[in-house]
Amino acid sequence: MFFSNKKKIKKRRENLCREAEIFIQVHFVRERNSDRYKFNTLSLKSDPDRDKVIEWYDAHDNPESYSEIVCAYFKDSKKDENTICERMLLDKNYFSKLENSLNYRPSKGEAVIVCFAFHLSYESARALLKSADYALTNSEKSDLIIRYFLENKNYNINDLNYVLGKICDIKLKDII
Image: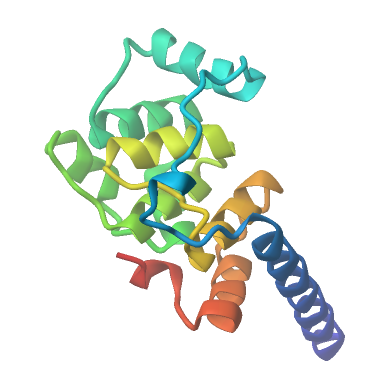
């Protein structure tokens, strides 16, 4: 039974790798320094997911710092700090540390782990990462894999680490 379960997990993760590779092929953009390739600066149409993020920020008095935003998500979640920290491999005093330090700056990997801990949508994750001065680009395979997981609402850190390791030879905690 245990062996069968391991086979299923391996098969599921290999399938995730294939799907992530396809996602990368579709979305990968090589960075170019030429003005010819600059992104279009036209206003974006309204997006329901982005509108929800704006509404969430408005409802929480527009927190600006990474610490304020994460603490607001933590309060909304009504989950036990130890449970979240254990599941996401964060320091067990993580949220207490954030409450005491408004200028805390996480690593990119740590900020992504927090996005997964709270099951944030892609748009919410983008906003949280921006507050820590990070972004998910279309020119980094690891960023596209993270985006793939967020867009598909797959918040399993072990699966994400497996795919990152297989495709990029990196783990989430090592992303700076």
